[in-house]
Image (tube, rainbow, N blue to C red; front, side):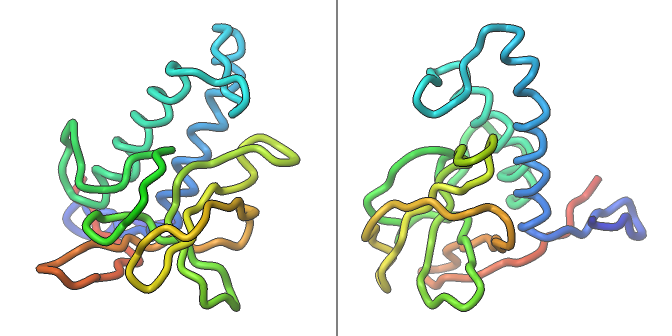
Length: 160
C-alpha cells in the first residue's frame, strides 16, 4: 500500500491503483446483482460499462494525470483500439516476457475479475491480437507520450 507523506501527498504505484480499481469493481458486484444489473461479459450491457468506466476514470485516470476531468487522453476502459501509438495507456508487464501489452479490461475466468483482457502490441504499438492474462503477478505502468517519446511511469505522487 502507498503511504501518506509530508504535505498531504500519497505516493503509490500504478499497480496499486489498478489493484484498488479492481477491488472497487469486485466490491460492488453483490450490490449490482441486487439491482439486477448484469456484470459478466457475456451478459453485461451499458450499465456495467458506465459504472466500470466511471470508476476507472476516477480511481486510475485522475490519479495518473493529477486532475479530475470528464475526458482523458488515456485509453478508455474496455475499448478495442487498432493502435496505441498516439494515446497514453496502461501497459501490462508479465515477468519473463518480452511481449508488450496494453490493458483493456478486467474479465472473468475461474472467478470474478480474475483475468485481464490485454492488447498485444508490436514495436510500433499497433495491436497484433487480444488475449487474456491471469491477474495475479501482473505489474502495471503508465505509458504516456511526452513530445512524441514514450515515457513509462511506475509510480505517482498524488496531492490529497
